[in-house]
Image 1: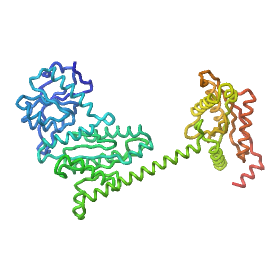
Image 2: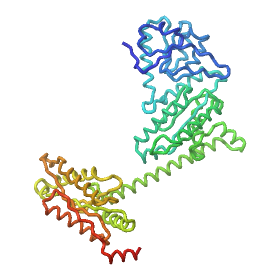
Image 3: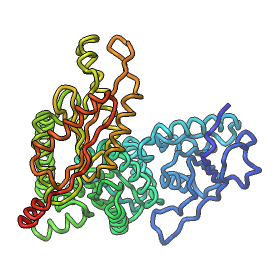
Image 4: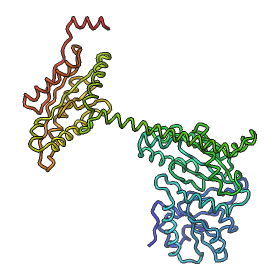
Length: 508
């Protein structure tokens, strides 16, 4: 049994009506079409057909086999020619890799088999991420276009390259980069419905073929460029593109079209990126200025490649320094900040609180019976228990605002900027309950019951010395442990003495 997916549309040029189609194909999504009539005002361009995933062309429905071949060349989808024996040799000689052929007296089962095969081949030629054609389809199309096109048939190439795409990937991650490429593929298909082929040549580089002059292609390119830059392909990452435009008039042989389009892209990038460069304008300018275009192209490529190497070295160096800084500031076991960083940043955080008047709450967490866990189960189990508590803390605090440092051993210091005491009590109570409810085991699988004692305070107007603040919060942690552990104890807010208030006002 041969089948095409439900969403696949098969356009059939030559069938008079749906009732005349072979009964084996009656269940498919078939679209009977009349042969398009050439528009004398559009040189070399076939009138657009309704969008189809596969196309069946009966040669008998056309005035000439040449017209049938020209229509096949104007579409990107696979084509199944239904031909008489008379036209078979010519069609076989000109057949593209994406297409197939069948005699007009072939049984319906053979037609169904050929269409099913074309459908599978089509899926193999589609880039799964962007929905555009693959690189092989692009060069195959150019070769067959050169064999079938007339001397005055227009063809232009848009070469599009996303600017700084590697930096985007490095900064925001591959998922964001892939999302940008996927959206770009959809945008190109939407903006270029008459293009016979849109292909992803590799990475962030795309090729769009258009049966128009380079002036018309440049207008399309500018529209695409504007769509890319405003509002962009992704909400968190700005995107621009450099686009080169070339036409068959720029080359002696059509297989050179890709090369000159690439040179136009490099010229766009060398001129500052986020722009459209037409190859013919490059040649005209070089002639007027008496310059060698090959030398200009070499300079453009050298400039762009030099920028890429410089950017790569800078990004690599920045990443190495960031890693070194992270290693110097991060505790290896808990992945929280280490004591040295905690002391330095907490001092600045306390100063900011004093100057701004913004609330600042501090909590000191101590893992209960940690020494007994180490003694009974060993240090690896103790490390595992501490990491479990750290995972709970991460889930309970606000990412990007609150931060944690390892104060020492099993003690963790939680800093809550902008949080008043009542809210801090709620956060710590939820954290304490979450630790008690989290299942934990030793390295040998023996269950453990983990609990924490938490001391808490909100810095108030009477706090003038950070060491005294740390002493106050540590006393609350000690009080929690002495009161039975697995609880939160906090210091009440204090009123500022009048003499101290006056002194602070004078200082202000």
